[in-house]
Length: 303
Image: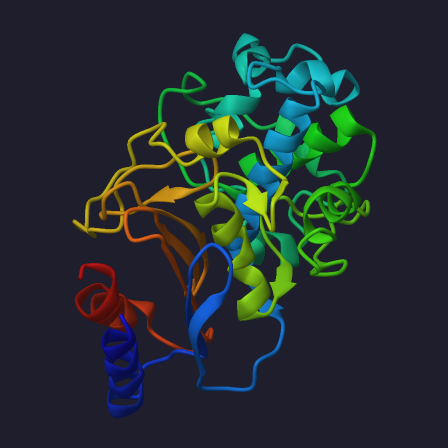
């Protein structure tokens, strides 16, 4: 793998590809790492969703939450009068699968910056029409992740950031995360977390090791297996080989048993269980991920 790694590094320089850093790790340590720009915490965008999913798994293991819990029952005060019956059918598992039934990409980054849904994202979303049967169709929407994160908060009685810090980040030695909050002060379950490359890839190490970190069981192995399995088909009109199904806030990969946490512009933690490796990469907003992906595929991931 060392040869392939340095071939990739050379290719990035030769073709001036938009990459900030890449690292390869096993379940315990970073094996190879290279930074093309200064190593600092950056916005990892929707990679954040996989941390929110981890919080769901922790709350389920604590007996405080269930995949069949209904969104509307958690927030009765936000349910509008004469609400659609379909609204009451949205369950936590549907939110995690991006199949809430709202069927629109709500509360994405540009929407939030424009003030859409402010100040109360839950009330805003529960007033949206449910266009298709919950659980039936995949539509990628950060709103689904935000709602799932708010269900975690309601279940555990803490902010999502506090809960994850105590149960996940602090044991990993990461400190308290910089994290975008909504206008009411709730961490955005679908984005806005800032991390360095070496901290970002730790979630992959924990998941590769069936939930363990330095001998300590942090996450239930049963949750890892379920969250990273293919739970729903994903439309792929462009025949992108990396669009091959979705779990609970994790994307499936085209490599055997492989999956990834995936943030906009190329904030990726790829778990390759058959190889016992994690490949993580961070890329700039000004880059072109479509030029980076085939090089990663050819030089590292498919070998």
